[in-house]
Every structure is written in structure tokens, then in C-alpha cells.
Length: 455
Ligand code: FAD
Image (cartoon, rainbow, N blue to C red; front, top):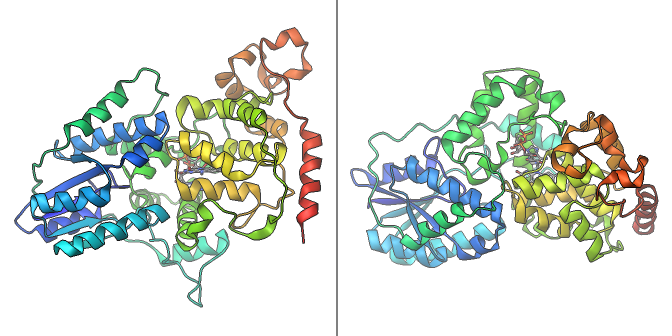
């Protein structure tokens, strides 16, 4: 091969600048599309995440005419080995910006340099590469709104053109790696996942823009409706790039489109924060709550994890996560608030559970989403803002449909009665648990703990 395009969070064929760069470097020779299944990440992922990656890899294999080379092993060993095997002059990637990805890439590029193979980074998984949006002094934006304004002003390139005359190498995969993928997809107890891959992402995007986008600004908070794009899991593995979405949105100029651009900006903002503060992945970004007393009651946390807290909307959401590997955004806030403020648990406990199950599980968006709710992150919602799980339910699932969909024990309670099952006679609950804590009391307790550390 002339060059290798090593795919990581960019499992697609279109709008992929690193592929264009690989094609240009290869000249009249061929390009090898490579994906390395890293045992550490593979084994650490929950069932849904692993299945989502497997399905996306299969779709990418089709998109690359069956020539996606899949290898199993530590990329620091595998990538240099494949480069030698195919006598590549260069390895092309989208720049990785997470702490782990950066460390890995530094090691791989150093090994390649020893072999005389060029390491070329073109683009990132973001419209604007993390670290590129800076204030007048050249520093970072610490809060979202000024960041998002500067991010828009910075702008982004148009979608990358498809590489013409590209020849793909035919280089053998590890049979064992594809066997792992196939075995994963053949498992019977898998959560219900959406269709994976680039074509599926574009189809879903069209369905969304033809339908729910018009009312997105108002309906995006409604857990009972299919009112959001569901692009997050595609963005996570790069079966679609935000640039593609932004170029489409720019043609629309509606309130829904403007709101959607704002939401994409959150994804870019959190990636920027993580890039600047790698330690914030698992530690409080700001010392606001230093010295805070946390509990970790295994039984209570387990009730939260499995959706048995006795608060219907919290339970519906936690069960949605287990059943689908996805949870509605408003419900991510409500359940995160419940764990941190009602159960007084430090946010990484919840962040870890989410990351294990979410098919869109992303270190930057997830862990900073958690820190936002916990009150330790950027632009933090003030700590004293504690979500009320009952009123949130009544507001964002007004007819109780979301609760009934995921909590069968409450399926017989009509309309919004599903949000307050304790108002019914005990025998009426059909196995649904009593509330594990009293929200009003725990809210007061959370405020007491906050007052004790506030300076
Ligand atoms: P849409 O409403 O259609 O939004 C469009 C896109 O904008 C999303 O796909 C996403 O890329 C981006 N986006 C929207 N809201 C946010 C946000 N608050 N932060 C960052 N990006 C956003 N998002 C993830 O992609 N991965 C995660 O692991 C993740 N964990 C979260 C954990 C918590 C506690 C919270 C509060 C939020 C988390 N989010 C995460 C953000 C948000 O909940 C999801 O991006 C959204 O629910 C995905 O559904 P969608 O694609 O239909 O969203």
C-alpha cells in the first residue's frame, strides 16, 4: 500500500479529510483502511456498546467494499506492524483529543517515526478542533455561552469532497477479530439498538430533519416523544461528522435548526474542556465542592442502577438505559441529579455506569454532563438546584407514556397517575417498589452538606 488510513472515531467513507489526505499521499498506489480492535476497550465496554461498535464496523466494511482491514491487539504494536507489512509511507488519522487517545497516538507515531513512516493528522471528530477556540488573550473560554459564540465566529470547513480515483488495498484481516464482531452480534440478549453505520445515520438524519426538527426547540425536552435526532451514537463512532450536519442546518434557518447548532456546540465545548483539562475526566473540574461529604450506599446505588428507586421517571430512564443503551437528555439530568443530590453520591460513580451502557458513551460529553449536574463542572448549575423527580416527570412526560413504556409494573396507571403511584392503595402497585428515599428530606440534606463546604 502507499498509505494507511487508520480509522478510530471516524467509521465512515464520506466527509473524511484523513481519507482524502491518505489518497493524495498514496498517489497511484493504494490506501489501506485499517481498524484496530483494542482488547482493553473491547473488554471494558458493556454489551450494548460492544454491539454498537460491532454493527458499525460491519457497516464500515461494506462502505469500504469489504476491504476494511480489522486487526485485534494493542494499537501501539499493531499499527507499526501493519505499516511494515504493507510497506506504507504514511499513516493518516483524524487527530484524537481524549487523554487516552492522545497518549496512544504519541506512542504509535513515535514507533512509526523509527520506521521512517510519516504520521499525518487531518481533522478531528469535531467541527472545530479542540483547543482552536480562544478568547482575545489566546486563552480558554470557561463557560459555554461565550465559547459557543466564539465557536460560531471561528467557523468550520465545508464537508470534505469524496476522494476520486481512490484504490483500496486488499489486505487480510484477523479472522479472529471479525469472528469476535460476528459473535457479539449473534448474542440473543442484546439491547434493542438502532441501525448502525453511515447510511443509517444519514437516513435517520433525513427522518429527523423532515419531521421533528421543526418542533425541536420545544419538544427536545419531552421524554415521551421521539423529538431528538439520535445522532449521538453515530457521532460517537464517527459514522457521521458534525460538519455534515452543520452544512445541512445552514440551509434551513429555522428556530429548530438554530437550537440544534447550539446542542452540537455543547459537544464541541466539552471536548475542548477535556482537551485542556485531561484530569477533569475523573476529577472535579472546579474545587467548588472540595471537602464535600459523599455517601456510597451500595443498596441505594444498585436500586438506582437497575431502576428500582420508587420514583417512576427515574426508574423509567434507568431502565431505558439498560434496554436501549441510550437515555433521553432531560432524563440524564434528572437521574444524575437523583444520584448526586438525593443519594449524595459522588458523580464518577454514576458517570462510570452511564459510560458502561450508553452507545453514545463519550468521556467528554458524559463526564462533563455529570459534572454540570453535580455542580463541579463548567458553567455549573448552582449546586442548590436539585431536580424534583416528580415535577420533572409531570412536566416532561405529561401523560405518563414514558413511564409506562419502561416500567411495566405501572402500566395499569392511567395518564399522569403513573408519576405518583404512592397515591394508590398498596396492593395496586403490583411489585413496584416504595420510594427508597424521601426527596424533600434528601433535598434538605443536600443543601446542608452544600452549606458546610461553601466558602
Ligand atoms: P439531540 O437533542 O438530537 O442533540 C444533537 C446532538 O447534540 C447530540 O447528538 C449531541 O452530539 C449533542 N448534544 C446535545 N446535548 C448535549 C449535551 N448536553 N452535551 C454534549 N453534547 C450534546 N452525550 C453524548 O453524546 N455522550 C454521552 O456519553 C453523554 N452523557 C451525558 C450524561 C449526562 C449526565 C448528561 C446530562 C448529558 C449527556 N450527554 C451525552 C448529552 C446528551 O444527553 C446527549 O448528547 C443526547 O441526549 C443525545 O441524544 P440525541 O442525539 O437525540 O440529542
